[in-house]
Amino acid sequence: MKKIDRTVIKETVYIVSWLLIFSAWMQAVFLVIGRWDYKVLTGNLLGASAAGFNFFWMGISVQRALEKDEAKDAKQVLSHSRTLRMLFLFVVAVIGVTVPCFNYLTTLIPLLFPRIAIAFRPWFDKKMNEKEESDHEG
Image (cartoon, rainbow, N blue to C red; front, side, top):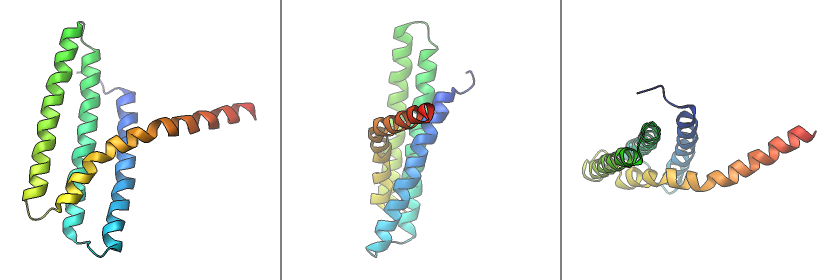
């Protein structure tokens, strides 16, 4: 495989940044409601790490698919990647729910964080474009 594309790295950094922000908020909520213990932290670490790795893996898979000559081969790469990633997330979820050193909520909730971060992306891109335009005018 070739070098990791800059876009994959940039988007993964974006997602991981949001994972850290959302994870800190979640830790704070558990602390404020008086339900924080080490299991909240370990569950959050497991879930957020899995979510970040899953996103990076997806980016690498898309990069590999784009290197394929035929659409059928690219589709197969993406399909295989999706199956393995979903299996990986399922295993992480099972571990987070069944192993007593993890809080099941703080393991499962971070798996949703990348979707939330992706939903915010158009808003941030718009703000960045507006800022760049005002910098160029001034």
